[in-house]
View 1 (cartoon, each protein chain N blue to C red):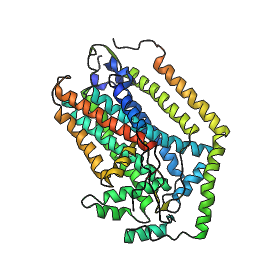
View 2 (cartoon, rainbow over the protein chains, first blue to last red):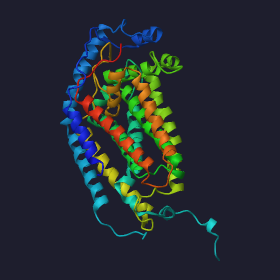
View 3 (tube, rainbow over the protein chains, first blue to last red):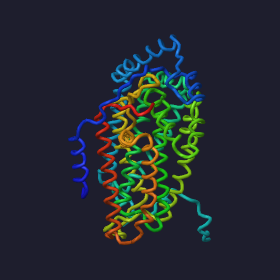
Length: 109
Length: 332
């Protein structure tokens, strides 16, 4: 690692500087992006004055957005994920075996 | 009766030719590990495409529906994590080539194909991010449109990409245009490695050899380690799906490879998204034309290596800074 110290110093410098990008004020009301809105955007190239998400759409989205975190928490503790983790660990160990375990020479010099 | 050698059938053993012994080192297998990752992305991408609806109104919902099944959630996460790992591997491969000076002489053309592959890989990551069509994807798309509009004739291209077909066009780019470009660059890249031979390791004996099958076996071994860890990460930290998308707000940050650009955009405006990638592209393309001497210890070569180190270090610094900071608004 001839140049390792350079990267290490740069990383320390980066971490010691002030927090980056403080201000991100948003004064405009967020508007749900729909195909109708995208159509208007394509015509006038501004996307801040339009937005026609229906109440039904908004309600469905609200449920869907809340659902993702619930879904993620659910699947993370599922049997499928436990099996996947075990298989992945086995693949890592097999790979380490292929790389580091000595094997009979198959040719070359 | 002796048979002419041209009548002999090809066997698998014919591929088992001798290659330099240093082909077993990790640095000389990174390209192969990257290739392995691209194959995994193609396979998982085909499965994901079967469940995806490429439209503005339904894209995010289809991703959400896929994520409702544990295997679907993991598959999407694995695809995302593998994409990021492949970009990391491409950068590692590029770094090894710079440090060993393997871009000179007859390998110059292959360097250019490699630079092209770097940008194609980044294009895959960008378009894949947009396809989710959540807040992150929408913001990424808006940034791309605004920056494309800055280049000559870019406004026309941006107009073409706006509208209700935005997601469909990104999907076509992701599954047809970029894969075609990838094939057009990967095939000659691999062919030139075969033609020129594996690049030398400075200071290593050229006489010491191993076999191509051992080289491939090592690539498979390292790939199993790398993508096994990626599979674990995908299960432990499933890929995010943000709400929305909503116009008029910016509340996400892009994938790690774009974080350096994100910082420069904050300092220099949206134009940085055009100027910086072009500068990086031109800089990388020029390297084999600037450093043409065979001497590995020449002053020019040292200048190239140190310029590369400074450039990569600067990007790492910016990536860490932005990674630790809250999102900033750039558009509108």
